[in-house]
Image: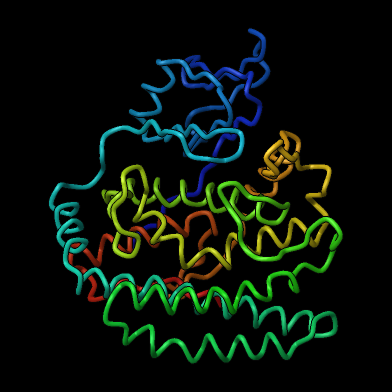
Length: 346
């Protein structure tokens, strides 16, 4: 691969009463009609707003022209809408994507690689815990789950349908998440994990997980669009109105190593605390405005971490991983490579 997309910055607007406008080639951030910040457009790859922040039409126009995505999310991290310019790539690539999606056998082949990447990486996270924290955890349950996940790989590869594939993926997810609470080493009184719950999340840990998955899925959608693929037409997650199925496909292999490990770091290093959450009348738990501010400071740092990509043998920033994998997926769909290579964390 001749070049890797340079990781720029994402501007996160966390306070609902701020307004974004254009001044030359600069984004002006206003609060109560006063300019409180300026960001050069050439430093940005995207803008993400939370709440009901306004964005001027002229800023949206120039962002579309420059390929800078503008994403609107509610204060709880739910995707609402995105402003983006013309599709990149060509229609032949997307037509082939649609043909693969409609072909059960070809679609299953790609879906298997997403899941192989996911289970390999979740197993790697458990292995890293045994290696780094053997004196603080009960290692045998981890070793048992590591072995179980390893033994599912042949079943995943031999799956004859998407339903069968999802069945094995769910079993691996249970084996992994059964140990998630054991990976929380600090603040146990405030951060207890008793299984996944969502829509809405009902505890601090699930609030962090859901928020992180939502943020990362928008990164995957933007990456797919940037290489000319349709983020709404997937191979594992089937079409549903309003669901970015291919973005959800792509993020599967990153859930444990990028998202979950980030959440565990926030908790175990006491970066995010109980005071950074609010509980709604229905019991739903979400990050406060201050919590989101702290979260994004560390999220940007996480994206800038360096790793060596195992397939490319190039050192890249973590934040470019969705783009790199989207590019490899596009190359597979075009027929440039024989198989989509999932990302394996080392």
